[in-house]
Image (cartoon, rainbow, N blue to C red; front, side, top):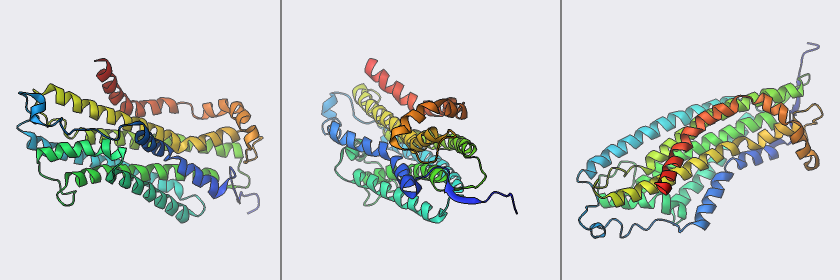
Length: 344
């Protein structure tokens, strides 16, 4: 009918698939930087060779007499964390897929996100299974401790190996989180760069709708973030009760190790949350005025960012408190643990 809006086949911001792919790839930039940093700036792992020997602690034993009972409880507890984390990730992925449905070439772009997520997960598998600093800190110390206890190996392993169990226990929940992050970034940036708008639809109003959608997406992904940090903390704490309570030195050492690794995971996941939406946020910020043509050159990008800051601040009003409430529990506990280790 005359007067009705019709699709223009033009998205609200120009850039197309190239811009969309760059934005999705940027969501895993913190992970890449984290892997490079620990590979270059650390010793590559923790030497536990002499630490678990009875002779290293004089009259004190290394492990509790009930270590095998503690192991069975720890494995069950971690399985519950993974179960809850899986439900949260699958729920978030379903939500982001529903947002993807309006994007042009829905199936193609979803498959692109799936294959990209698989590629990133494969990288995590490779750095976890090979001689890297990531394995040296995330897998090897726990493997040495679990092997020394001679506890029953969970079913999630091959060749009755504690290392293979830990590899699966780490990679599976991490991969789910990676897919959730990729889908979140893909669906949001797809609406920005790929979804056609109506011919009579006000461009500024459309950007306001996208800003509101980003607020909801951030909160949804924040639940995945908190779940990821709690699951990582549970993973690093599996042997927490294994040590003889009288052996304060060894218990303190492993507590420090698990707290440090948990803190690193919390900071990594927080940075990932920001990276998943930062390109789209900056794009909205630089195109939110009526003069925006949908294509911003580098020369006027920064001036328009400054001009439109108040507009975006108003549209995102209230989101910062929500994010702080969700992120704070994820990173404050390990941070406080780490600081107490330094100053306590």
